[in-house]
Amino acid sequence: MKEQLKLFMRLQEIDTQIDRHEAVLAQLPQEMQEMARNLVSLRHEMTEIQEGLTGNEKELQKKEDELSIEQEKIKRSERRLLNIKNLKEHEALSREIKLGKKVTGEIEDNMLELITKIEQLRKNLDRKQAEYEECEKNLIEKKAMSEKMISKATKALKSLKIEQAQLEEGVNKEYFKRYTMVRKARGNAIAEMVNGSCDGCHISIPPQLGITVLRQLEFVFCPNCNRILYVKPENIPTPNGGK
Ligand SMILES: [Zn+2]
Image (cartoon, rainbow, N blue to C red; front, side):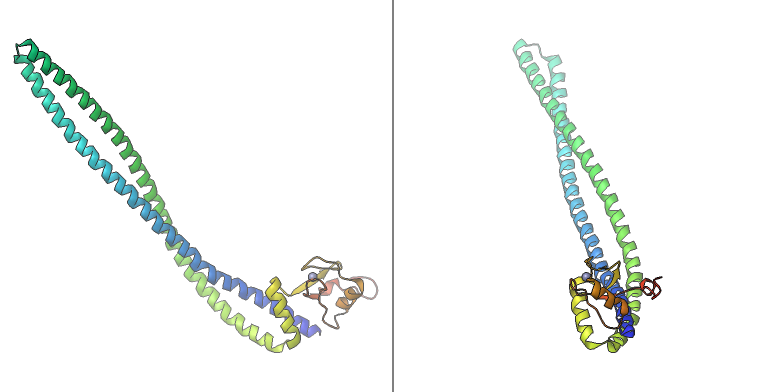
């Protein structure tokens, strides 16, 4: 019985290690996929900002052209104004110049707004670009690290599975069924009895059952969680009352 318990304890160790390595193998590709998705969405955001930037720059160019046309018109009118003697014509042309200046003022206001917008978009784009480069760097590092971790885990799993198969061959088949069921439900199937309690579910073990656990002559299952109970050898009291 002690031998069987030892086999089951070793099996639990092995199974726990297998779970850990398999979790690594499942998790790493997921993490990398997540990072790759993040890169794609950053790229989309950058494209959108770039499109906005191009649109605004075109608009600014248009406004610059409009402004120089208006300014040219004003200059021409001002030159003409110098030669006009007729008062009515003079007044009319003056009004036209005033109106033209109002229009150029509006265009300049528009241009200022566009310039501010363009500056913001450029800053935004720079920030996204830096973020993108950082993420890309992280992904490359992660890939290199993952490859190492995956090959390490794969190698470890190979030898662990061999030992697992050997242990499963050696353990009592009836208890193994129970072990498998409890492990599936609770993550582990063997628990230490500490100060009269099951360390798996922290329920007090009835004293009579506790004594059976200490004797280690038969398998004892926790009445609450069904884990196989064991005691560390140093916690088994000796007949003279010491530990
Ligand atoms: Zn328990």
